Image (cartoon, rainbow, N blue to C red):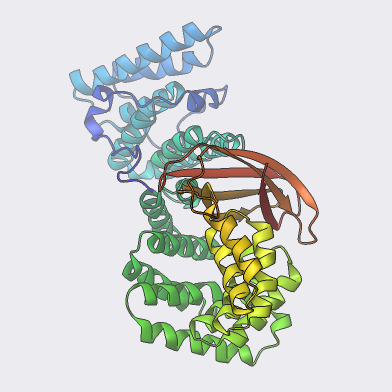
Length: 473
């Protein structure tokens, strides 16, 4: 979701760690243990400056004030780097190992990474000890980042996640979470980069199947957002080799087939999905699979079957915007104008400032020759100051996030006279499947020129959120 790797740091060259501009992370220094722990691998100082550096490192754990600690660590760093640069200790793994430990106390992420890498290269038997330091501090930074994320500090969370991923590369979770944060910010390029890195790690460990699968679907979704359908197809083929019947992956593959101009492949997959599901009791499927069946049937131009699937999904959640929207389009394709009006009316109740919703309602009314109703709907449509498109609705156990875009229009009255544009205030309600309001948020949309856009992002708190609706304040 960005053009460059948002701050990912290249590994510093191992023999020049002390010469690099420090990559300091205060949080890392804060979470270090209070007591010194000896090295758990076979290293020996073997040099007076290295011994001096080790003594000062130990002393830093015993100091009484922060200033004394800072001074001891800085002197330790100077002694160790002096040994490496002035006394030919660049092949002494102890010098690098203890330098890395000093950097840990100072919170210098780049120094930790490069010094530990050099120590391990010289003495491979230190790998277990070094990896323990790397992974433990990776986890500490990751948890601190999650706390910032919960508080809404996305930039702070991303900073900690970047530093964590610099220290340890053996698990995908931090990288995947970075992908989610970038995806939620519509920075799709960056999200794809981090989901790709996370997937590469997860594929190497059979214990990470769930992480692997979720990350692969997220990566495919980012490729779809970027219109990179060939890349999405490659990822989805890989996914379906792991989970051949997954409805979400098959639906996504059909979409990318169409996006890549492979309509025959998309139709064959859609028909295969519908044929398989026609032999299944739809009531036995979960709601996501019902939606996937409906989309596949719609794409295969089997609109009656699509309507049946979407209708069952609505029975479970009468306020599901996606199910209602898809059902309305199914009725439009079948020219069932009466049911189209009934369904589109519900849709407009959920999102009254969406052009597509109003057009669907108007088309149904036109098909029923309800001329007065058509004029009223048209008047609402042309009078919209902005059109609002909700692009993402993400659900958690006790939270939900709604993301969308407001686009400026050239509003007029029924006679075509321009209406003066202005800001718009929205009241957004987050609902249970029974329609109970769990949380309410107010959002302001500034005055927008025709075609200008404004991004919306709203987070709600509470259990049981399954749907949303909004209205002008």
